[in-house]
Image (cartoon, rainbow, N blue to C red; front, top):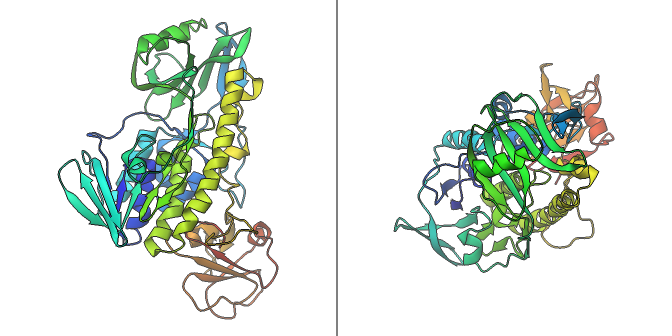
Length: 457
């Protein structure tokens, strides 16, 4: 099988890794002449950290990034206290990564590219797609380089303005609000503590202000501020926005920056024949809630194993479009609170973590593959060594757990036993503290099949 992934951002890179580690011949192309350099989507949510654990990049992501920092609030230039956008939570046996992690998008992409290269696949820069044609047997792709190549499947991960969705005639309904603009960019601020975030606002309107949040490993901050009717994404505009609040700081330089307008859209379809859409090509989000990158990565994680096995392909749209619709609602609600100046506009709850995603639809008919996230838990293996359920799940396979009963004679099947229970043959692990049985609400004899993307089948 040959698959073309159009777009070398987090979505395309995740899909490339998912396919390559399953032995699929995959190409990842991008029209850009150079890799993106900037923070953009810098918030990695707990469920995405679990995905990165499975992909083998979590250690690198955690080493390069940092936990979400508190915001020091300054009103009219005077310190007024600290604020957490998300209250830190302690790890639990079933949720080992309970808190968002901060890492600039370009750094995340660099880690994913390195992992993809371990499978011998390199992102092909300067290789824009100019057209495609498909038939019952495959897809023909035409590139700006003049090359024409044939693939079994093509995935558009080329962003909201990308060519693939347009080429297959999929509508992208939604709204763009030209009246509300936000200035976002990466800045250097000498003398400002890089271990915490900083919020500057007027005392008579503390909710509407300018935020400077640290970007680990760069010495920079991500700058975000409402922008009135005029102004561009220049350093001068950023400085003027900051000066409104008597911050007394000078911005020394900046990198990536943009003027963002609320753009909320959801593709009417995620699949046409042998062509699929993922990430921003299928849904674009407000930056509130930090969901864009995370939803795209999880699109790719859902699609990868199905595409490699050529199974349940229609369930990709059924499952992921419903998730995107819900996430767009959460992000838009936060944006509305921000625009209205509400006091709860800068609070994030568990609804943004991705841990409550469900594909379960009891009354559904057709190709839906139902399931919920399979929790983690500490165990002992047959040699008495500590392992986790996530260790058993890691990789491109299905995993079967049989609680209190012998494991069937199949690869990646385990009997989950309590201390003193006899294995009865086959692989087994010991649920010494009972966390696995609790997480799965498992009674003796219960069996669970876990999909390659960590959801119950």
